[in-house]
Picture 1 (cartoon, rainbow, N blue to C red):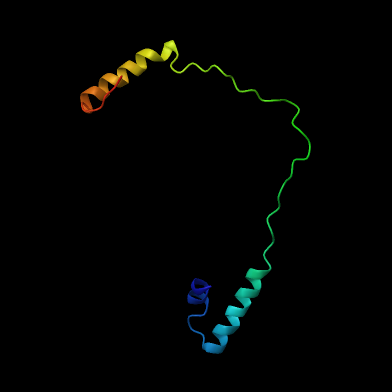
Picture 2 (cartoon, one colour):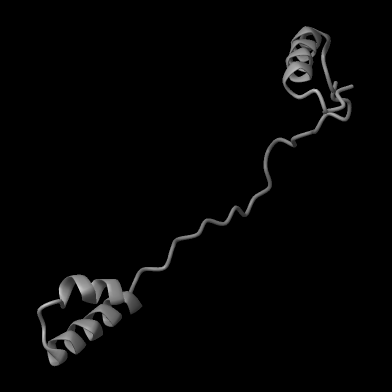
Amino acid sequence: MTQYLRLHARDCDFAATVLKARQYADAAEFTRPKKSIRILKKPTQEIRVEDEVEENPAYLQPLIEGIRDVMRVYFPLLNLA
């Protein structure tokens, strides 16, 4: 409200400023509530999480080793396995 009054009631006297503040407060009270959505039926498919996830697949090993080599050069104090 203070920012609104600074912008819109800059040249007004006290009575006009109070009137604009009341108008702003009335307008702020009657804002529309946000609509919400409720999903009432269950999904048609179940999502299954795979238990076995390969941590580092074989095709990523050369890339991981290259990153480790670069990090060993620039961060020699890190313990990289």
